[in-house]
Length: 119
Image (cartoon, rainbow, N blue to C red; front, side, top):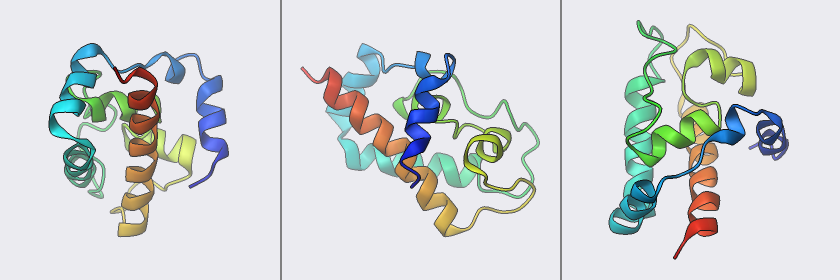
């Protein structure tokens, strides 16, 4: 994982505006980080990994799950953002290494946010 990606994301007014809500924090507390990571893996496999995504740019809701919030905060929300911010090519199926990279970015952000806001 490129450490400087979080520095770059922090400089973006849009990306840095995302925060976990109380509901998101409670959800993480109730489900646990391992379950959240399972959800993240499923979302990435189904919504980002395919070669062709008909609704690219609109497949990730802005809220409703901590992973969705993290995806927008880390520019892992659509293939266009993955290309622009992370250099992951479009129009090809994601391989396991790319999926693991995306999961690491998403979960790093969630863990940082969760530990900042933990009660």
